[in-house]
Image 1: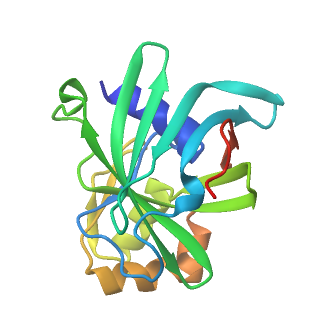
Image 2: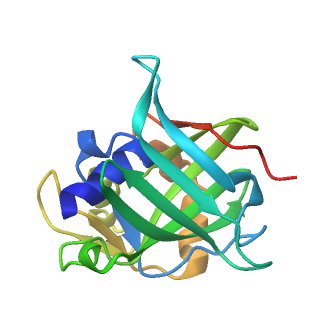
Length: 196
């Protein structure tokens, strides 16, 4: 089951299969902007930039009611997962927080708990990239006392941030956050019309 969650993140958020891990938070970071960025609404397909070909995963961001978070349905082969996605603007960056919501078989003990954090950037209305935080590098910041959280030793362990919403926002706006981003972003291309 955890393997399917990792497969999702590898396509959506970049290089998780290389780093093998996530950064999750108990709290949502404080920020400004809308709860659900309407520019994300629609269906996207992963794009493998190095090979210049489409990936196997499809991601549909569902339009919520006003002021409600987005729902993301990820489909790959015969597997799917549903996430609640919240967006905020911190400094000049678009930040997402995604929480696994289902299906029931995905909600196993080894599934990530809390909010998966990262950044996203639009390059046009039909192309965007997502970047995760690297769990090992975040673990180093936790060990140095620069961040509140926990991380077990080992290359493929999750980092769990426990700071307040304001502390998380301060970190995500800092040079430290930019320094611990995954090396390769995940690229998506839009399959449906952009929302009007």
